[in-house]
Image 1 (cartoon, one colour):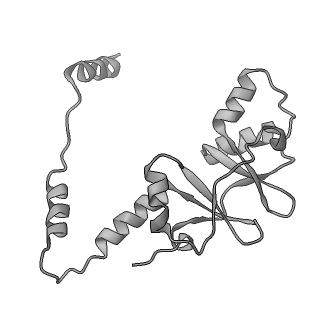
Image 2 (tube, helix red, strand yellow):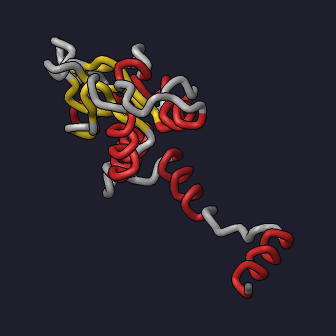
Image 3 (cartoon, helix red, strand yellow):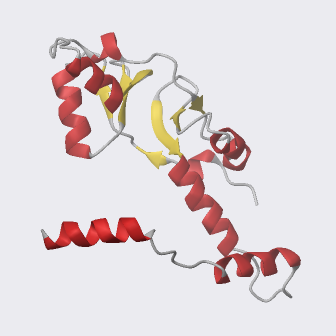
Length: 169
């Protein structure tokens, strides 16, 4: 089964203008509950990425809140095209090389976001698409064994005691 990036990506990712102030970026990160925002130029071409860590570090060090996103952003952003194989990208995410990739068209316009979460959803969907009427094979037996062995493991005793004392206070 061939799954393309455009099949699993998040469309219309949150982005800010390269001229947005750090205050505006901070408000966007908090209001949207994001760890990062893409930065685009006036033509909606990807210019960079700005993370919550970058903004926090800037704030803690007393940086100017009226500075622009362009001055603080990281310019090297991993990108992928929508017609590339999503499955082929899994090793890059698995190895920890990437947490997300910007999806851009041929002109460099930002059109989407591909993150670990989307790839995990894709893997789950691919497992569920397996033929239901086929005889159980070694791979399906292994998958069902994985599901049967899933269980809740209680927290260590010290953690349980700490939780109880927090709830009684």
